[in-house]
Length: 494
Image 1 (tube, rainbow, N blue to C red):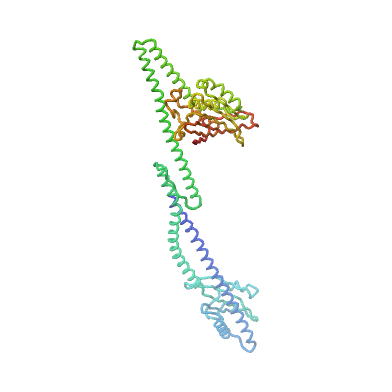
Image 2: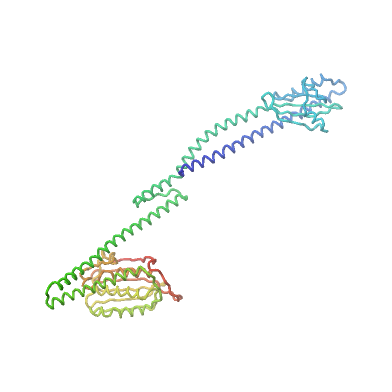
């Protein structure tokens, strides 16, 4: 059952349980109040009749003979003066025989009443006579040595008729109110479920691939909060989908670039190998072919090592230990010395004392790749500067700057992609596979660092990396899953 009908039925059920119940209680209470009032009025009239009748008998004194005719006349006179048209009365002797009107007999109530010692006590009952509801009240009167019984009958059918009329009007009002409530419940249920219908429609459209579908929150209730959460979820999903599309694009480009990197040297190697097998060559031609095959084989070997390094950075565990920065730079100079001397490039390292939390070999690989990129970009006699210093709030910055050819602004956002090379001919001459910056980006991310690349064509490139400095109070090594490491922040500026 839909929520709309659940709300409708819920509201109508509450109405059907509440209004008839409380309406019936209200009408019944009103009826009982009216009945109690009629009872009090009937008993009051009885008391007044009793008082007036006995007072009239006492005023007669000894001058008049009190016979049956005198009692009848006196009772009739008092009744006309005190009782209204809805009341009638009966006057009885002690024996139960009626004085007025003639021919009636007192019932069992009179025998019960006679046994009471005081004439202040009275009996009353509600009964029905000739289709009318009446209130009968009886009292015992003592005048001298004689005892009389007085019974006043009051017609209270009017309050029963009023109750029946009120119930009839109440049923009509209840029926009208039922339809009004049904309409109100429909409007209220529709208004309450409208945001949910919008949310359901947006969800279906989102599942059909319309990822820019959003809903506008209405109000500040829980449904509005749910709509806000849906929009947040949709934004996150769209971002993830865009990232997956971008990752798929990069994967496709990576596969194509990798296939190209393999195809070109393999084609040449196969050609030279076939030539060595099938043709008679001079010693010089054979040496040239073998040299080319050897050189390309070494390049493929280097490419495989780089690929394994790049893939390995996303798997396994990394042990984070205190890394002394001065020792790191000292090892950097030793590792890159021979390569830099080939082009007579000067490497200058200046750094303040400090330590980082990380993997020594990975950090060394990071700096070696950056220095090697600087070497490839510099002309002979160029300069590469590596600086390190504290940044405050427990941060340490390492900067690698060269005075090489620089990188065009439009190329900065692509240099961390695998196999991407700004100058492919220069990169191939230098033996580059285009994986160095991709490896650097992975290492920066694994160390939860931030880096910024600035470059100007013809002036050089500066790479600045901001690390979290090692806390002096820490002494234990920390192990972290490389695949679970969070993404670092990469900024590219001119």
